[in-house]
Image 1 (cartoon, helix red, strand yellow):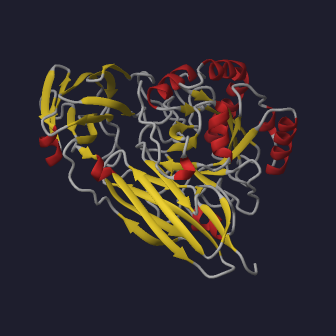
Image 2 (cartoon, helix red, strand yellow):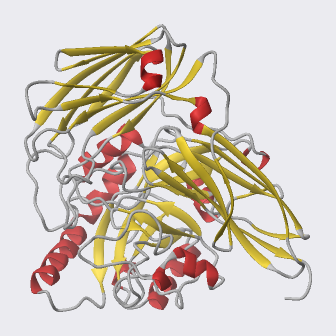
Image 3 (cartoon, rainbow, N blue to C red):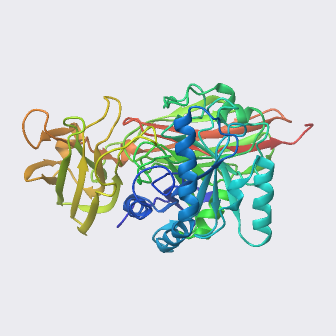
Length: 514
């Protein structure tokens, strides 16, 4: 499998690549659906690293609603019973250079907000989950670290009201929490005006629980995404992924990148996003004179709408692709299948062939069975997609779809092919025997669609081709600031297909009085 692990031309990212992962998702090891084996099989279809998370404890859980109280407790007991098996499977799917796994569990809290606990290993104790407050949890993690087992405690779905499982900024420290999960199935917690509103049963987002407010308070943390998916499908496309700039695809490499906040959050597509402030990467805290030389580099997974540079919560610069047409195509050809009647299963056998061109990388954009309430049930299997690259021109792909559950929920399955060729290069696709073929010249003009049967049968989309000139943006700015100010900068990316990315901030303190 050849994923698009992209490099940046900016100096702070020399010798590193952008890797994609999902380190917060669930299955039936606690409450959720599908086996942990299915979850890791699905993860390796489209991610470089991952962790399958078990719900472990909720020290201040309300007694009501009783059904919610009861299924949480059943889930916690299930994880305790299976903890040995969870460690074995987590360790078994790890392979340096191919796929990195980390052991994790989730610690719930009305008071402090939910945290996912990670070990720099496939093995570790479940004991710290019994902590009755955040200070106790940190003490237990310090003991483990003193004995050689490093740990992280990362807040997630931060945007809920503090006291209602949103982040408690007053209790936050960066000791075990260098980064914060700002986007998942719950929505985006960047700010109360960010895309991806909170629509879960747990309620709306509160502005004073968002990442923007935490930064305004002077807190220091990077950004990641993860899905919080509950159907054994890490990386389920569109709900959040963690991107890291790492020097190697090992536990050590991924862990160090997270610790250094060389991380960024994406909703789904493998957007390459790199920032530099006076030669330092995202996540850095740096001294500076009054002059800041800033660069932002982006290579989208699809055509980029705009890139914004934010300073202290305000957009100070915006840029869009401005490249000239290319003589040769070096871009992305994407194919999606699904649609049709809601809940009606469609099995797909797909062959993709690029004639007159070369497939340089494959980016799967796969969905699991989407379940908002983890106590709900859904029919069928939880590992149902496979893909294989036969050679540099051919891919075979099989999957299932059941329609889109709402008109705003994307449950399609997609493969994005990174292709080199020219206008005459042709993408030939066979979907359950239905053949479609279009040249890059045709797809540059717009998408082409088809169906595998009659009215309300499964639909097919060969998306508009995305050449590199529509996907690449480089923003450069010299920002001159008064002495004595303390600023933070980050970048936001929006693609035309409504996929987003947010870089971790960089913090700059000028000389002068505090």
